[in-house]
Length: 167
Image 1 (cartoon, rainbow, N blue to C red):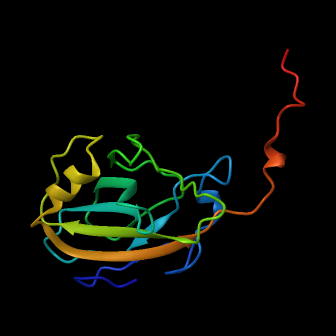
Image 2: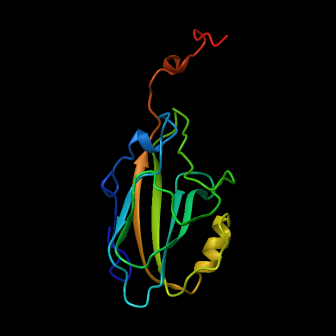
Image 3: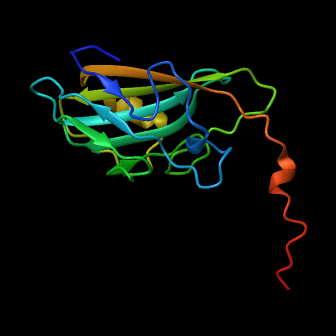
């Protein structure tokens, strides 16, 4: 999806406004962060940052806070560990797997890409709020990509391990 400054953010895993695959959510056992790709930022950009939030939750729920990405056309591969990662809403420095109640309507996840005019001096593990504060006044281009997700109606009995004997 096109954003400010001609920057464009896409994902090979879902269309803009499309559905997030369960392999990027808590509905699958080995889930990872989705892949992202972006166009070259405008001249003067020195670093890229990504913030992913659930726009449908009560208050901001941060699923990913990433910075330290090279200011050029680039991508994050599926499950790739970014250069610097901040704390998600649970206080972990990783992709927070969307885990939605089965009766919730679809949630909208907002992937925000920022091109910055200086390298950030934030330490890994910074909070969402600290990252937004550091971005203030330094965004030269931005792009947004959204995806929706609704928990599956699969029967939880498939995960029942009571019959396993580890003795």
